[in-house]
Image 1 (cartoon, rainbow, N blue to C red):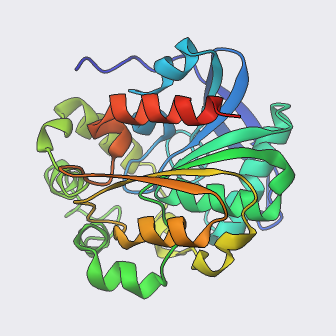
Image 2 (tube, rainbow, N blue to C red; image 1 turned 30 degrees about the horizontal axis):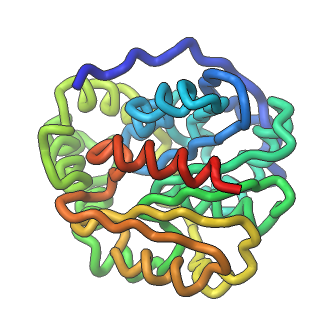
Length: 280
């Protein structure tokens, strides 16, 4: 599949309380209509566009406005040296949608982006229309991820910025994200390694995402979730956690799929998501 070219990006400045100075957030905005904010996962060299480039145009063609920021610490956004807590990310993204004049949106979140989407829905429920979560983070104690998930273990085994974190090592880490390694292309490795070289080690060493599972009943927005049966980063038990913990949730689990449902099964993800967003 030919990878879509990234559109021209824009920048806004956000002002989280835990930062010493404003933070520049790089983002792309496509189409018009009801707004959907896509929040990426974490990982070495991660960015918003690389996470959702196979999905964006479909949503635009269906009449939605697609907004894809690079989270602080990732992509081409600023990468400050601070504690990357859930509260920090939630503050940044809440201020981000303020800055671009979006009073209310649906949020699509993969992995870390899923945890942040839940965090926004808990902190500012009036800002959230619906939630779409894929391989969602923030549903276990931190130790569970590090002790049981081989993808997390591999991603954190070699320190970011060390000579051992080569493009070859990055390739091996990213192959754990997918069921089918054909999705880990040379072009993907080149772009992620470009970003990786600019990343601050704090984004992993000082990231703190709490277990939100006990607060899921507080989520007012309807939830659609996706999970790959072969996810090496977030255990598939999270699908049951969401289905049993949220007031209104539908979960779709897929065989022969890893952590990137939206990349490995874009048609299923795109079509089911748009149907969900259009339902009254």
